[in-house]
Structure formats: C-alpha cells, structure tokens
Image 1 (spheres, rainbow, N blue to C red):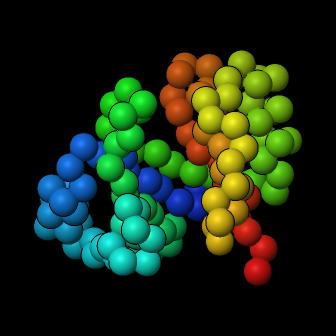
Image 2 (cartoon, rainbow, N blue to C red; image 1 turned 30 degrees about the vertical axis):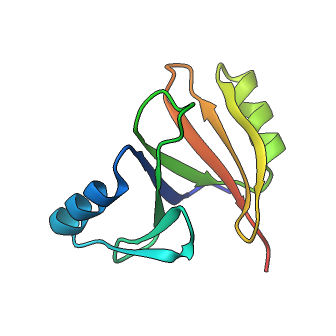
Length: 118
C-alpha cells in the first residue's frame, strides 16, 4: 500500500506571527487549546496539520511533512537501506501514534507516522 501524506507540521520561532500569516494568506484556523504548546491547524481539508515553537535543539524553523506507514520500524529500515538516515528514532506520541523523522539521500527531512489505532 502506498504511504499517503497524512500530516504537516510547522516549527517556527514565532507561532503567533505564523498563525497570523497563514490565517490571512490561506484562511487557516487554529486550535491552541487541545494540545498545550502545539496548535492544531484546520486547513479546510485533510491532511491535518500542527504548529509548534521551534525547540532550541532544532537548527532552524521548518515545515515538515509526514507520510503514513503501517510499521515505523520497517520504514526506518527501508530508509536506511536506501541511502537515508534516521534523524529522530521511533517516538510514541500519546493519543496520536508512533512517529519518526528520516533524511532522504539529499538530506531532505521527512516524517513517518503510524497512527494510533482506535
């Protein structure tokens, strides 16, 4: 089964400014209450998105895309065996699922996500 785009995420130095920008330019709305420190983005259609303040250890602000997979460990192994590298190992996100970040052979960082089963 192909791995569809399932989530996008913006890490920014100024979430309030970013919300004003993306709200004005694209008409997005934001839920700042459901997950403290992480704004859920309603872009009007799937996939859903999120926004957070850039953590100090992140080298720069970034826009990430996440692709849905059936098994994060298998996807990490495939990425590594095809010239990629693991940037963030498999990490459980409560009520969301398991995610990881990999860099492709050119260094482009992408996310992979196995959503939590209901």
